[in-house]
Figure (cartoon, rainbow, N blue to C red):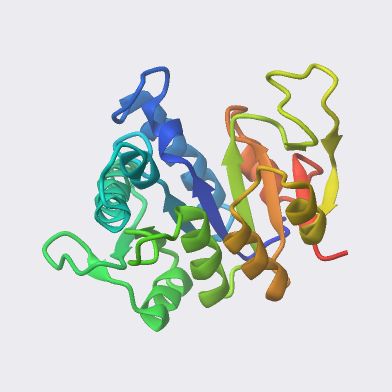
Length: 237
Protein backbone atom coordinates (compact mmCIF):
# COMPACT_ATOMS: atom_id res chain seq x y z
CA UNK A 1 0.00 0.00 0.00
CA UNK A 2 1.61 3.30 -1.06
CA UNK A 3 2.17 5.96 1.58
CA UNK A 4 1.79 8.81 -0.90
CA UNK A 5 -1.05 9.46 -3.35
CA UNK A 6 0.69 12.04 -5.53
CA UNK A 7 4.44 12.48 -5.91
CA UNK A 8 6.83 14.66 -7.85
CA UNK A 9 9.99 12.86 -8.92
CA UNK A 10 13.05 15.04 -9.59
CA UNK A 11 15.86 13.60 -11.67
CA UNK A 12 19.04 15.32 -12.79
CA UNK A 13 19.76 15.36 -16.49
CA UNK A 14 23.23 13.95 -15.86
CA UNK A 15 21.70 10.66 -14.73
CA UNK A 16 20.20 10.17 -18.19
CA UNK A 17 23.69 10.13 -19.68
CA UNK A 18 24.41 6.78 -18.02
CA UNK A 19 28.15 6.08 -18.10
CA UNK A 20 28.73 8.66 -20.81
CA UNK A 21 29.70 12.30 -20.49
CA UNK A 22 26.52 13.65 -22.02
CA UNK A 23 23.52 12.98 -24.23
CA UNK A 24 20.82 10.41 -23.49
CA UNK A 25 21.76 6.78 -22.90
CA UNK A 26 18.94 4.47 -24.08
CA UNK A 27 19.50 2.08 -21.16
CA UNK A 28 19.34 4.91 -18.63
CA UNK A 29 16.12 6.43 -19.98
CA UNK A 30 14.54 2.98 -20.24
CA UNK A 31 15.37 2.13 -16.63
CA UNK A 32 13.98 5.42 -15.42
CA UNK A 33 10.79 4.78 -17.39
CA UNK A 34 10.51 1.32 -15.82
CA UNK A 35 10.82 2.82 -12.33
CA UNK A 36 8.13 5.40 -13.09
CA UNK A 37 5.83 2.73 -14.51
CA UNK A 38 6.26 0.51 -11.46
CA UNK A 39 5.21 3.38 -9.18
CA UNK A 40 2.25 4.31 -11.34
CA UNK A 41 1.06 0.70 -11.27
CA UNK A 42 0.65 1.08 -7.49
CA UNK A 43 -2.04 3.68 -8.18
CA UNK A 44 0.22 6.62 -7.37
CA UNK A 45 -0.15 9.84 -9.37
CA UNK A 46 3.28 10.73 -10.78
CA UNK A 47 4.70 14.06 -11.93
CA UNK A 48 8.29 14.35 -13.12
CA UNK A 49 10.82 17.16 -13.48
CA UNK A 50 14.09 16.39 -15.29
CA UNK A 51 17.12 18.64 -15.49
CA UNK A 52 19.02 19.31 -18.70
CA UNK A 53 22.62 19.02 -17.53
CA UNK A 54 23.37 16.06 -19.79
CA UNK A 55 22.82 18.40 -22.76
CA UNK A 56 23.45 21.95 -21.57
CA UNK A 57 23.71 23.72 -18.22
CA UNK A 58 22.85 27.40 -18.24
CA UNK A 59 25.09 28.29 -15.33
CA UNK A 60 28.03 26.53 -17.01
CA UNK A 61 27.44 28.47 -20.20
CA UNK A 62 27.30 31.72 -18.24
CA UNK A 63 30.60 30.90 -16.53
CA UNK A 64 32.20 30.74 -19.98
CA UNK A 65 31.06 34.19 -20.97
CA UNK A 66 27.51 33.69 -22.25
CA UNK A 67 24.75 35.98 -21.08
CA UNK A 68 23.18 34.19 -18.09
CA UNK A 69 19.58 34.66 -19.19
CA UNK A 70 20.38 33.47 -22.71
CA UNK A 71 22.25 30.45 -21.38
CA UNK A 72 19.41 29.58 -18.99
CA UNK A 73 16.88 29.57 -21.83
CA UNK A 74 19.13 27.13 -23.68
CA UNK A 75 19.17 24.95 -20.55
CA UNK A 76 15.37 25.05 -20.41
CA UNK A 77 15.19 23.75 -23.98
CA UNK A 78 17.53 20.91 -22.99
CA UNK A 79 15.05 19.83 -20.30
CA UNK A 80 12.33 19.60 -22.95
CA UNK A 81 14.49 17.24 -25.02
CA UNK A 82 14.85 15.01 -21.94
CA UNK A 83 11.13 15.23 -21.22
CA UNK A 84 10.28 14.09 -24.75
CA UNK A 85 12.77 11.21 -24.48
CA UNK A 86 11.14 10.05 -21.25
CA UNK A 87 7.68 10.42 -22.77
CA UNK A 88 8.67 8.19 -25.66
CA UNK A 89 10.17 5.55 -23.36
CA UNK A 90 7.06 5.52 -21.15
CA UNK A 91 4.61 5.35 -24.03
CA UNK A 92 6.50 2.41 -25.53
CA UNK A 93 5.71 0.68 -22.22
CA UNK A 94 2.03 1.53 -22.50
CA UNK A 95 2.04 4.40 -19.99
CA UNK A 96 -0.07 7.44 -20.88
CA UNK A 97 1.88 10.66 -20.50
CA UNK A 98 1.70 14.39 -21.05
CA UNK A 99 4.63 16.76 -21.46
CA UNK A 100 3.81 20.27 -20.27
CA UNK A 101 6.23 23.13 -20.82
CA UNK A 102 6.65 26.53 -19.22
CA UNK A 103 7.72 27.91 -22.61
CA UNK A 104 5.09 27.53 -25.34
CA UNK A 105 5.96 25.02 -28.05
CA UNK A 106 2.57 23.80 -29.17
CA UNK A 107 3.73 21.34 -31.81
CA UNK A 108 5.45 19.06 -29.31
CA UNK A 109 3.94 19.69 -25.86
CA UNK A 110 1.08 21.28 -23.97
CA UNK A 111 1.57 24.66 -22.32
CA UNK A 112 1.71 24.38 -18.55
CA UNK A 113 -1.69 25.11 -17.02
CA UNK A 114 -1.99 24.12 -13.39
CA UNK A 115 -5.59 22.92 -13.43
CA UNK A 116 -4.99 20.89 -16.58
CA UNK A 117 -1.91 19.29 -15.04
CA UNK A 118 -3.92 18.28 -11.98
CA UNK A 119 -6.62 16.82 -14.21
CA UNK A 120 -4.07 14.73 -16.11
CA UNK A 121 -2.73 13.39 -12.82
CA UNK A 122 -6.24 12.53 -11.63
CA UNK A 123 -6.76 10.57 -14.86
CA UNK A 124 -3.66 8.50 -14.16
CA UNK A 125 -1.36 10.10 -16.72
CA UNK A 126 2.30 10.70 -15.92
CA UNK A 127 2.91 14.43 -16.28
CA UNK A 128 6.42 15.53 -17.24
CA UNK A 129 7.16 19.20 -16.65
CA UNK A 130 9.70 20.74 -19.04
CA UNK A 131 11.41 24.11 -19.50
CA UNK A 132 11.85 24.75 -15.77
CA UNK A 133 9.83 27.67 -14.47
CA UNK A 134 10.06 29.44 -17.81
CA UNK A 135 12.30 32.07 -16.23
CA UNK A 136 16.09 32.44 -16.23
CA UNK A 137 18.04 32.38 -12.95
CA UNK A 138 15.86 29.58 -11.55
CA UNK A 139 17.06 25.98 -11.43
CA UNK A 140 15.09 22.84 -12.18
CA UNK A 141 15.17 22.18 -8.42
CA UNK A 142 13.18 25.38 -7.99
CA UNK A 143 10.88 24.29 -10.82
CA UNK A 144 10.33 20.94 -9.08
CA UNK A 145 9.42 22.66 -5.81
CA UNK A 146 7.11 25.11 -7.54
CA UNK A 147 5.27 22.48 -9.57
CA UNK A 148 5.00 20.13 -6.58
CA UNK A 149 3.39 22.88 -4.51
CA UNK A 150 1.09 23.94 -7.36
CA UNK A 151 -0.28 20.44 -8.03
CA UNK A 152 -0.47 19.60 -4.31
CA UNK A 153 2.03 16.74 -4.39
CA UNK A 154 2.46 14.91 -1.09
CA UNK A 155 6.26 14.73 -1.40
CA UNK A 156 9.23 15.49 -3.63
CA UNK A 157 11.41 12.49 -4.35
CA UNK A 158 14.90 13.70 -5.24
CA UNK A 159 16.72 10.95 -7.12
CA UNK A 160 20.51 11.04 -6.71
CA UNK A 161 23.61 8.86 -7.02
CA UNK A 162 24.07 8.56 -3.23
CA UNK A 163 21.86 7.05 -0.54
CA UNK A 164 20.86 10.28 1.20
CA UNK A 165 22.18 13.56 2.56
CA UNK A 166 25.60 13.67 4.21
CA UNK A 167 27.36 16.32 6.28
CA UNK A 168 30.18 16.25 3.71
CA UNK A 169 30.83 14.63 0.35
CA UNK A 170 30.87 10.83 0.94
CA UNK A 171 32.86 10.40 -2.28
CA UNK A 172 35.71 12.42 -0.76
CA UNK A 173 35.27 11.78 2.97
CA UNK A 174 34.84 8.13 4.06
CA UNK A 175 33.81 9.36 7.54
CA UNK A 176 30.95 11.49 6.23
CA UNK A 177 27.80 11.16 8.35
CA UNK A 178 24.48 10.39 6.70
CA UNK A 179 21.32 12.00 8.03
CA UNK A 180 18.17 9.91 8.30
CA UNK A 181 16.15 13.04 8.90
CA UNK A 182 17.07 16.72 8.69
CA UNK A 183 15.20 20.02 9.00
CA UNK A 184 14.87 22.48 6.14
CA UNK A 185 16.52 25.16 8.27
CA UNK A 186 19.51 22.95 8.98
CA UNK A 187 19.91 22.25 5.26
CA UNK A 188 20.11 26.01 4.69
CA UNK A 189 22.33 26.75 7.70
CA UNK A 190 24.80 23.95 7.02
CA UNK A 191 24.83 24.53 3.28
CA UNK A 192 23.97 20.89 2.58
CA UNK A 193 23.87 20.12 -1.12
CA UNK A 194 20.31 18.89 -1.50
CA UNK A 195 18.50 21.45 -3.62
CA UNK A 196 19.23 25.14 -4.06
CA UNK A 197 18.14 27.55 -1.33
CA UNK A 198 15.15 28.85 -3.31
CA UNK A 199 13.78 25.32 -3.68
CA UNK A 200 14.37 24.46 -0.02
CA UNK A 201 12.74 27.70 1.14
CA UNK A 202 9.66 27.04 -0.99
CA UNK A 203 9.30 23.54 0.44
CA UNK A 204 9.79 24.90 3.96
CA UNK A 205 7.18 27.63 3.50
CA UNK A 206 4.66 25.10 2.22
CA UNK A 207 5.63 22.23 4.55
CA UNK A 208 6.37 19.94 1.60
CA UNK A 209 8.64 17.02 2.57
CA UNK A 210 11.62 16.01 0.44
CA UNK A 211 13.12 12.52 0.33
CA UNK A 212 16.64 12.23 -1.09
CA UNK A 213 17.49 8.66 -2.12
CA UNK A 214 19.75 6.54 -4.30
CA UNK A 215 18.14 6.06 -7.70
CA UNK A 216 20.82 3.64 -8.85
CA UNK A 217 19.32 0.84 -6.72
CA UNK A 218 16.54 -0.78 -8.79
CA UNK A 219 13.15 -0.62 -7.08
CA UNK A 220 14.09 2.17 -4.67
CA UNK A 221 11.40 4.52 -5.98
CA UNK A 222 8.71 1.96 -5.15
CA UNK A 223 10.25 1.35 -1.72
CA UNK A 224 10.22 5.07 -0.94
CA UNK A 225 6.63 5.45 -2.10
CA UNK A 226 5.63 2.54 0.14
CA UNK A 227 7.12 4.36 3.10
CA UNK A 228 10.22 2.25 3.66
CA UNK A 229 12.96 4.18 5.53
CA UNK A 230 15.26 4.79 2.58
CA UNK A 231 17.41 7.85 2.05
CA UNK A 232 17.07 11.11 3.98
CA UNK A 233 13.82 12.85 4.85
CA UNK A 234 13.80 16.67 4.87
CA UNK A 235 10.98 18.12 6.98
CA UNK A 236 10.05 21.09 9.13
CA UNK A 237 10.70 19.56 12.58
